[in-house]
Image (cartoon, rainbow, N blue to C red; front, side, top):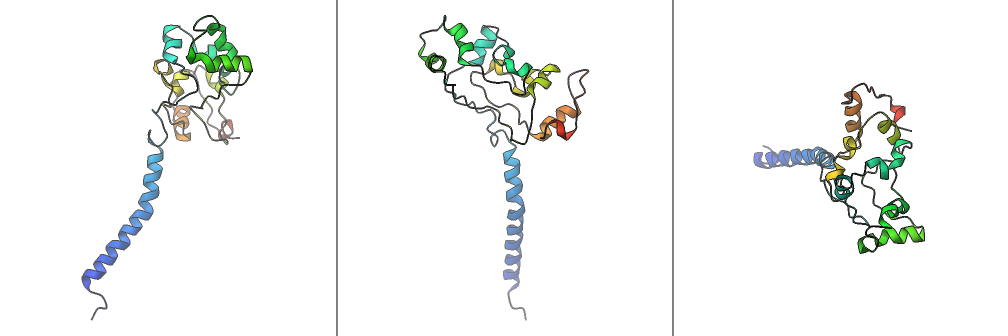
Length: 186
């Protein structure tokens, strides 16, 4: 005679199977979620200290990305333009706008504006903007159509796999980007 009924044994096996499924499934679901646009905060515009509209500056005024982010041509970092660059125009136009008060304060006090990073790669990753810009990679390839964004948001995951996909199958003719790990990881 069995110690437990057949129903109890079946129920116990079902509970064990559910526990095993949860132990494997929960981490798998969390890893999958972390790669979704919601999990990476992609498509969510960031609130910035200054209401800066790229649509106006790029589309309406015809300002190129590299005018403000001039460091991208010669430095690993694209950089945030200093308030002095903004004041070059805004010292004459919209000079009394309340929207530009943080820019004027930064310009006169010398304190940088506390912009929030849209893309922030891990510390162990080295990304060189100048190497990409110098080889003809358009800013939009990684940052999306910023010129049509009121507030900037992440469009690409910038995961290692995403970068490797581009390096394995570059869409830019004549460019054969390197695939060795030391190019990006320091």
